[in-house]
Structures are given as C-alpha cells and as structure tokens.
Image (cartoon, rainbow, N blue to C red; front, side, top):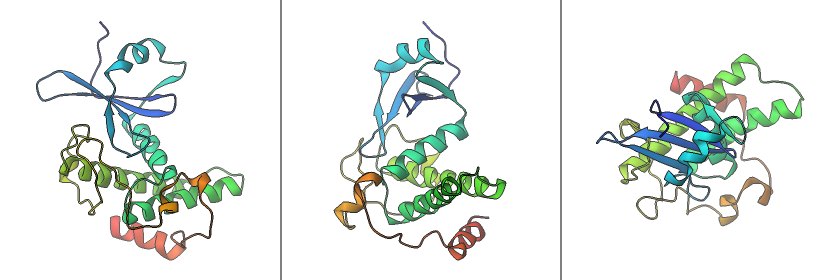
Length: 194
C-alpha cells in the first residue's frame, strides 16, 4: 500500500483531487464536482493517482490546488453573485494578459492569487456550513456569503436567482461584461482584503 503524507493535492486529468486525513486517522479522497463546485468521494482514484504521477496526474502544492480549483469553478460559473463577481474580476485580469499576449505582471499575479484564496475560503466555508464532508479543513471559520444550496453533500452553489444562461460554462454564454474588471473595483478589492 502506498503511503501518503496528508494532505496531498493533485490534478487528475486537470480535475482537482485532494487526499486528506479524517478525524479518526483514516484517509478520505475527494474530487471536484464539475456540476456543483463541491466535493465528491473519489476513493476509486487512489491507485491510479499513486501510480500515474507524471502522466495525466500532477502533484500540486496547496496554492496550486486552490488556483486550479478556483479557475475551474470560475470557468464553470459556480458560486453566488459575490463569488461570481470575484471570479469574473480574476478572469478579466487573466483574459487581458492573454489578449495582450504577455505573462501576468507580479501585481496581477498576486491579485489573482489573493482573489482565488478568498473565493476558495468562501466556497469551502459555505460547503462546511451545510454539512459537506469534503469541505476544506478550517473552512467553517471563513466569512462566506449566503449561497443557494440544493442537497447536503453535493450542494449546488449556483446562484439560482440569476439568468439561467449565466450558470452555463463560459463557452455557452454571450453578452457584454458586467463591469467587474474596472480599475476602481480591483483597487477596492485589494483595499478591502488588505
């Protein structure tokens, strides 16, 4: 049996997967749900991940794991309006750099990282407050906004008050930006969080 130094974080075919210790000393494995942004049990992946690191499996640091998780949630538009606005701000920064065919500046990189750390904590805190056993440790202490949830363990964090088209993956939507990527908004985010 392979030994793991818990917690461990992976990208499995670009899907975030985490191996964490349970309160009774066992190991739990969770993969990100494409539909809800929550966590699904994934014990079936243990052997494949343990023996395929380097192929379609990559070991991640905690920061890389949070980045991948939040980029995925942002692309799939999972979360309420507050999380969505923060995701949209981060995505606008990433899109602008891609449009300009340049890497992120140090300031942009730091801002995106800080936004994703914040949205990760908000999302995980909401999952924990609704009893999701896969929610990150210590997540319940975060100050999460109220999210619309359906179900207990695979709760949907989709803002059901929004236009249904807004809850589709980005490639399925069209229309103008909502304006969350203005310099004033970005500045207020850093002031409020810093």
